[in-house]
Image (cartoon, rainbow, N blue to C red; front, side, top):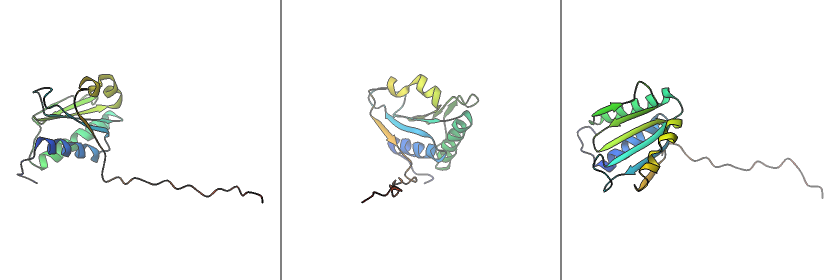
Length: 138
């Protein structure tokens, strides 16, 4: 993919998928077209610890660099509570889950169309009912 120009929508989807590599939770893409000029898309996701938040941010940054798109600006890495990765048209917000609920970007940008992203590599498991150990008396 190196050298290929990606649309901003595809770029947002790629960053979301890269976040899922490190098991990011509740990954959403907010489409900001017509709402602001600061970015076309926000990608918002969460981690359970500051270590996981950093790992998610590292994965996004490294995978994006591998396809030729380097981060323009980065904030919050040392603290690991809210890391912002600015790719100009797409801004990735990697939150610690408690910090995410406090700032609630999805509510703040409630007018933005939202797409939930799930890991396509994770197959849905089908629960089967186990046979009952009770036998009816007939």
